[in-house]
Length: 405
Ligand code: FDA
Picture 1: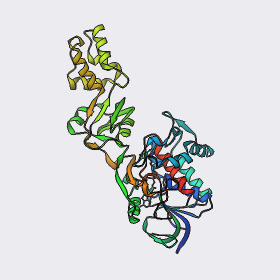
Picture 2 (picture 1 turned 60 degrees about the horizontal axis):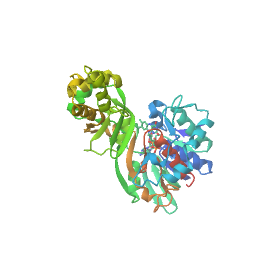
Picture 3 (picture 1 turned 90 degrees about the vertical axis):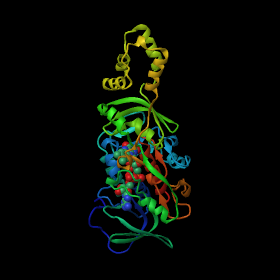
Picture 4 (picture 1 turned 120 degrees about the vertical axis):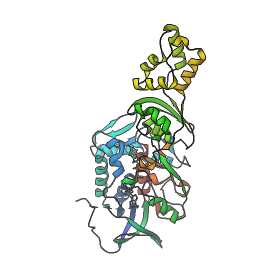
């Protein structure tokens, strides 16, 4: 029998456990199983109706559960070295072995990105099974009302119970997708114990556009093109998707984590080509040819048309000087967009910033000045690039704390 409680609980009255974990998400469940296998009595509390809701919705329902090429270089943090230890001790291969032990079929989509061949639910079921085997109790629909430090640990008050524990792990994630149960709870607990929170903002999130550009690009909704996007000193070569609201797709999600409001975003619509040289060659071979004909060979037809109408590229190539062709190429390779903003936490995959890593041990995730208090997963100021890195951080930081609580 699974010890997952969604309605009536098994215990009445004060309860003593070794470890309370708040948050039955990716990091919390991983930490719980790890600690449970060490013989620790573990209780996981979550206010949601289901465990691992973000896992269920991740990767388009198929969960990009890790990235075989994950290294500390794929992470953002005010302290880039913080994540190294945990990631090294629990590499992607370790999670893959767990997935394979549970017989979960998987596929590699882009290089290194591993997804379930079936449904993301298999990953949640696997984590809950691991928790069950490790003797962990997972209690859902249980909001935490108060946390206090005691002489030998912590007292956690829920709506119907008081639990005392030696170790308290905060695994409540970030602020993205509030409709899925995201709350600032983890940041509030950190503040309660004097731990600094670095400014948070939405990451891996689509861009919104100002009305004139939005209107101009409206006919392109649904089109995906490979681009190179540059902002904040980073460049990503991935597909970009035009949507009814703005610009999305992997290239935009990736670069959004590095973009700062007010900054321009530079998009190369023909990465890997030299449009000026291509057009000059074409002008010599086919003077009557047009920019549209050239673009139609490299871009979706609807996009070439919008670009040519927008910039007035209608004359035969023989009427373009070298400077004119350079100007066309500049617009294609360096399309400078000033986003209105991003879609924010409503659709963001992650929250940048969070619990300041300077307050935590990189070996154990324990708060330096607050023995027995741990922070893991997305609530910490460690954020991965798109492609399975964020789950890898959740697993690795969960295991690091699970071995220490
Ligand atoms: P997570 O959010 O998983 O869990 C936090 C838990 O805490 C939740 O169960 C929540 O209910 C609970 N909680 C919150 N407040 C609480 C409170 N006050 N009291 C009690 N419980 C509380 N990453 C990746 O690597 N590959 C992917 O394919 C995707 N895809 C993806 C798609 C979408 C749409 C989103 C939004 C995100 C992704 N991600 C992703 C990111 C990934 O989901 C995220 O980084 C991890 O889930 C973070 O794991 P955590 O355990 O830290 O938080």
